[in-house]
Amino acid sequence: MVPLCHYYDGRRGERTELGGGRIVVNVDAELVVQAVDGDRDAFTQLVRRHDQAMRSVAWRIVGRYHLVDDALQDAYVKAYCSIGSFRGDGVFQAWLRRIVANTCIDHLRQHERRQEEALTSELAHEPQTTTPDRITEADRLQRALRSLPTNQRVALVLVEVEGYSYEEAATLASTTIGNIGSRLTRARASLRAILETT
Image 1: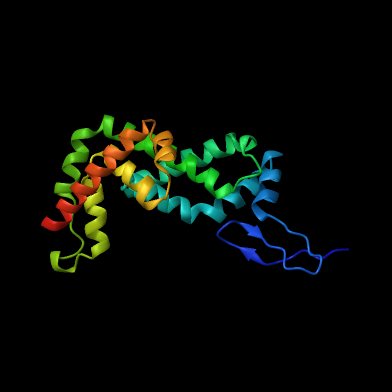
Image 2 (image 1 turned 90 degrees about the vertical axis):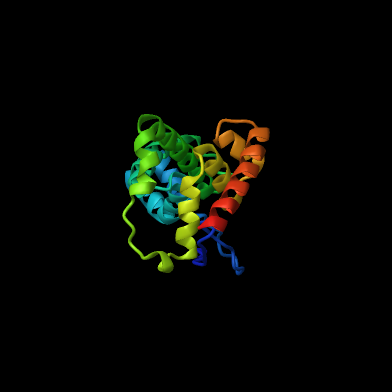
């Protein structure tokens, strides 16, 4: 019997062959096969393995804690329902990230359509948890991101933070590559101006 290799590469969710006739095993692929066969525990394990990374994607796109959990729950339900469409030749985390990004964009658009006035006043009335001289650079950046128009923030997060190409970002945001480029230009200029005045 050939022993399984136990070296785990957390970035790709894979075990790597170390030589000596050991079998290469993709942990995510094993769990995907089980999930496709209806094993909910396997899908739960997949979600747990990637939840922190997906939570980070969701937070950067929606920018509001109260929307993150709802968006992630919907994204995970969508992923569970469409797990059969996952092609085994890709990385599961990248497939899941696309679903999470799309779902977050949809949630943000719906939320802002329903509560546009409430959202614009939220920043002005948000209680400060730190004194102005103790606000960190990360706090300043997140506040600046939140003040950008939705389409600019989404373009900036998808391309600059998540590393999607213009074409991929355009697909995720349901727009054209040209629109992504112009939104990025405006977002960068707005962000620069906001950060210089705060």
